[in-house]
Length: 145
Image (cartoon, rainbow, N blue to C red; front, side, top):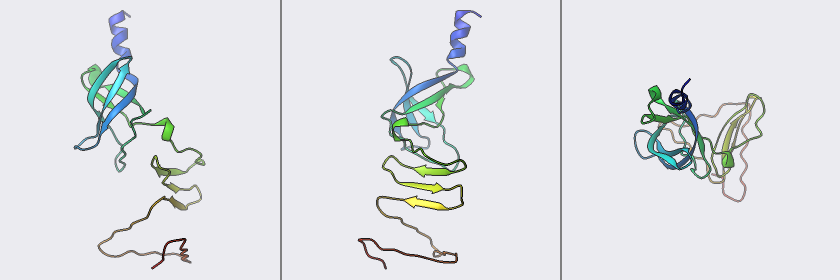
C-alpha cells in the first residue's frame, strides 16, 4: 500500500479533541482537533434519538468520521468527557447525568433513583398520576404542600 492510500485510510476515523460546542441550531456542532494543531470547525455532532446533551468542552473527546473518505465532510460521534463521567453503575443499569452531580438511574432492580441539587418539576396538561402500594413524602428544610 502506498503512503497516500495509507494516509487516507487513517483519516477515515480518528480520535479528536473537542472545543466550541454550539447547541443553538438544528444540529449541535463543535470544533475538532484531528491531529496536533489541525482543527475543523462547525462539525456536526451525531446524537442518539431521544437523547440530547451539551457536553462541557473542557477535556471532551470524540471519534470523528470522514464521510465517504472526505475530510471536508466530517461528523463526530457522541462526545464523551472523562473528567465529568459518572461511573459506578451495576451491570444492567442506565443513567442520565450532568456535570453537576444530578442524576437519574434506572437500576438493575427496577427502581428509578433521582438525585438533584435543586428541584424536580413535572408539567402535564392533564395532571399527574402516581400508582403504587405506598406513597411516602418527606420534607427536609423546605416545605411540603
